[in-house]
Length: 273
Image (cartoon, rainbow, N blue to C red; front, side, top):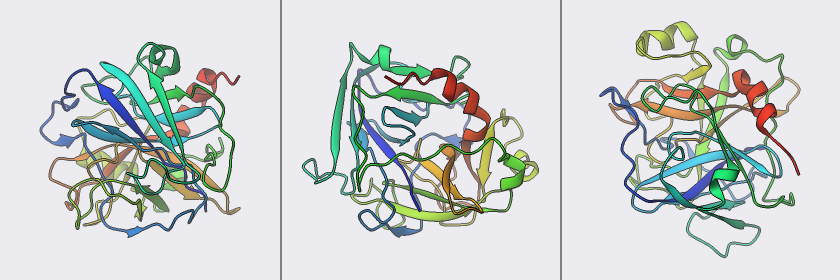
């Protein structure tokens, strides 16, 4: 199985407030439950970025030049970005097989594509692309994740198992983990998800069940949700958008951007060199 997770280290000019004003939501999510992954357990490209003193977020490498992530932490006030690709041990800057990429503030506007309809209050269309300064060479530690086929639908995923992984908090560690964890979750029927979040715009969203002690937690915003298809291929189906403010161990669902619904937008905005 190939999982491709990306975490960025963004330096912001000011503290980023929770972009969701509703008391029912929290925008700082991390992996909760699950197990630690082994190094290169799934040859996956990882990028870790920390927002010093502010937040931690993630993304997915979808080509040798592009990272797919959420818009909520990068749509304003970003001064510079450090992208860790192929990382396993979060704090080991000299880790073998890893690329540490820096994009300075002057170049960032040319490298970020934020969905033109993104709403920071409701997190609608909470999706963005980041173009890296140069193409990556794929290796045992750096690979891309495939986008889902157009034949796949959100309806067809209901009840299926998907995998979420990242460096976020766990029940043992309230801070960001040094090593990534992964956990299996179940995709909920949209009708049930609508019951939990009736006031939100749920179009182009996926939900995983709220089974206690399993799901995203602080540090996992932007973290990829992957699925293995019948032909044994692994594809990116979602990226974490938010969880309920009751906490990581609560039984409320985690909500994801549904990558399947953004295939046209992604392809229209990727300009490969």
